[in-house]
Image 1 (cartoon, protein in one colour):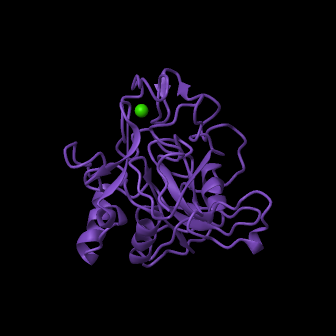
Image 2 (cartoon, rainbow, N blue to C red):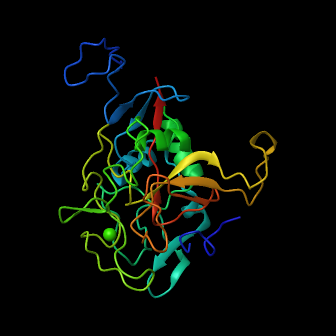
Length: 274
Ligand SMILES: [Ca+2]
């Protein structure tokens, strides 16, 4: 079941390095593939590689051109769009190339791809020889693999020395976006800097699919059986998040959507086992 209204936002060769790697003090560091970062192990999470940034429009295009893949939004003929005038609605012709619809601006190559469903993200990951992160892996990476306890990766304030640290919503959601961070919609990946582990856009810009199902309260994970209304967990928050309404861009923020849902503020990044 596609869910728009009621959405929470209103909804190589790898070089097995030894301890002698310049610039890294960890003896376990392993050189990651291009475009990925090494995420050290946690208490119950083995080390893994993670895409430095959300998958971009250009990267997704390479996948489509190589495979002739057709996204779920293209099959449905519409996808979830948000406007101040209409809130969330299904826009005919909205897809990864035209996230706000065919009469709006085309998606920029260096922005995160959006209007991709969980199933689309999984297809890309499989093609790329990667997989989608669990939400525990995602959060572990967002916490610098060091279990930091700040609200955001960089600290407890969204604005540091006058500079916005993430692409979010400023103003009264859903009525006015003051765009103080410079972006009303998505932003180029990396525009707001990197975490200590070299990751970008771990807060704001676009929500990111994880492999985990949202398990209803009271249901034991081992007893959970997904059905047509089951949802996958999203992490990271987006350009539509305003903290009094949705503080999704805090490290612990979550949302959820059904696996076939495509939205203009939702993308993904991949991980790879070592
Ligand atoms: Ca913004």
